[in-house]
Structures are given as structure tokens and as C-alpha cells.
Image 1 (cartoon, one colour):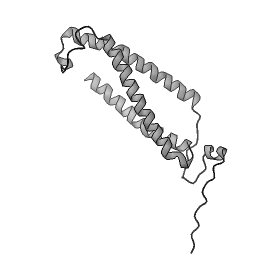
Image 2 (cartoon, rainbow, N blue to C red; image 1 turned 90 degrees about the vertical axis):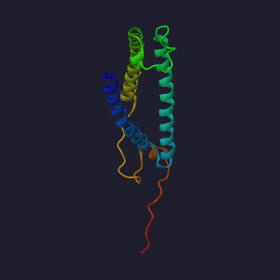
Image 3 (cartoon, one colour; image 1 turned 180 degrees about the vertical axis):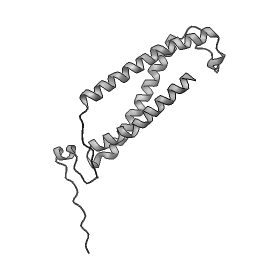
Image 4 (tube, rainbow, N blue to C red; image 1 turned 60 degrees about the vertical axis):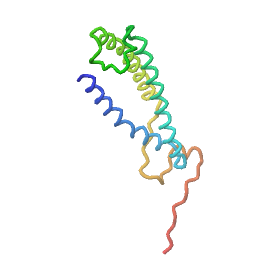
Length: 144
């Protein structure tokens, strides 16, 4: 029950932030590079998830008591009481590492990421485009 509640809370928090990150990245790059920036955001997210799951899994596996790690296909509820306590004890350091990484990322985001006003349309020139001297396409004039 408690684990399911915590997973739902985490899922809501992470899920609601996904589009904020994508929009922030898309707003910070020149219009011609929006597709590449979005793809790079998705790639970085996948690499981070892969590395994160690997590291957390290694921490949990290292902390498991002898005999618990070899129980293939056995549900947690079927583990002996000592095995469940061992699994719970192995999860605590993994979540502590994850919390420390999250705190470090938060500090980096707050201290080093500069605020940039969101564009109101695709025709606006971003600060990146203006400083790079990238020409902005002229509006198409309609002939009547």
C-alpha cells in the first residue's frame, strides 16, 4: 500500500514535469533546431533512466542478504520474514542515493539555469537566435 502510494505520487510529479522540460528546451533554441533539441532531450532522458536503474539495481542487489537475490520468480509477499526485512534494508540506501542525486540536480537547476521568457509564437526571435545572428524568415506576404 505505502509503496504503491509513493509510486503514484512520484509518477504524478515526474509526469507533470516532462512537458515543462521539453517546452523549456524548445524555447531556448533557435526555431531551426527545435527538432534536434527535442530529440536530444528524449535521448538524455532515456540514457539517464538506463543509468539510474542500473545504479539503483546494483545498490539494492549489493545490500540483499545471502539467499534472497537467487529467489527467481518469487513475489515479495512469499519471501520469508527475514528476506522481506533484508529487502527493505537494501532499498533504503538506494532511495537515499536517488534523493541525493535529485537534490544535486535541483541545486544545479536553481543556481545555473538562467530564466528565459517563453516565446508567444514561432515568429519571435529567441535570445539564442538574436545573439547567433541567425536570420529569421520574413513573413510571407499574401498577394491579393
